[in-house]
Length: 181
Image (cartoon, rainbow, N blue to C red; front, side, top):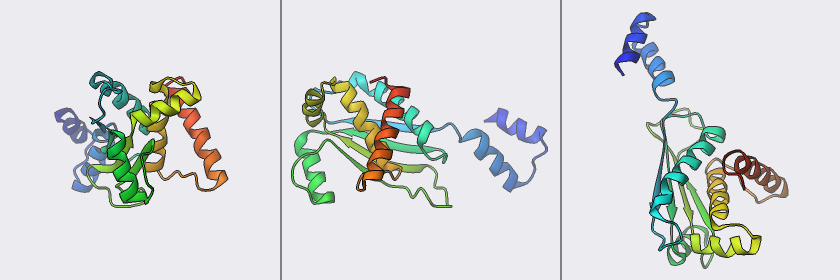
């Protein structure tokens, strides 16, 4: 922080408005926080959390908003917990593979500190079933679901066929770039 203040002084930025802009551009541009909450029994090991954090950060750096600092959370849940969320929020019975709940408004001019992107909920036991069907590893399926959830937080959808095509292309691009399925 001291180095940035010195840099601001050297460049003769004395205005509070310009100083705020300087610090925003230089101090906050790299801050992305991803929390991982693991409430699944044993399919996702606690030691895997840093891997999922790092992976999500790379995805967000690539396709996410440039608002910084930015926060999001990935939750790993059991089937009964994700079924409750699915029913309460989407009016669909039973468990699902992934749910995403955006928090911040991507279009807002006002930048909250931090910008809250939202939460992605993944059900590893449901993902395991899909992984077996697709002949993927569980980790590959979870990576796909995390990307899918992040894209939903960013406004992607798959209601229309054209949206589905765009979303699948973006998923593949990000997985090839950062996970290597």
